[in-house]
Image (cartoon, rainbow, N blue to C red; front, side, top):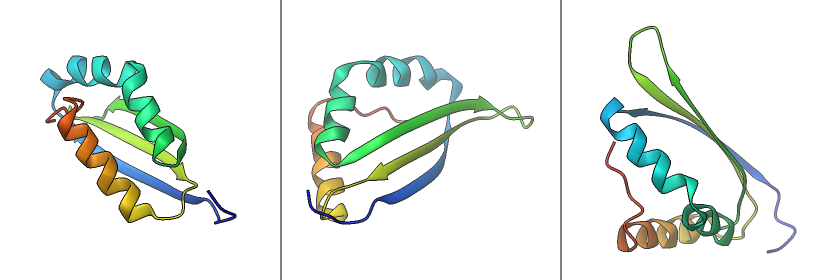
Length: 89
């Protein structure tokens, strides 16, 4: 990694209630954490909330410190699909 400035990202993602337990089990292990670190992602935070509309949403914040965001995210997506770390929510 270089002296590239930190890029900050925030996302809001809807998640179906029946997928929450599976999502948590996949993301609680070291696999996803290690994958994110290898992709240059730091300070990754997920907040799961049920809003007044009754729907569940994830609020995600992370910082990217790598040199090539598009390449790193493509590689990460490929690994997620190939390693059964994906949850269809």
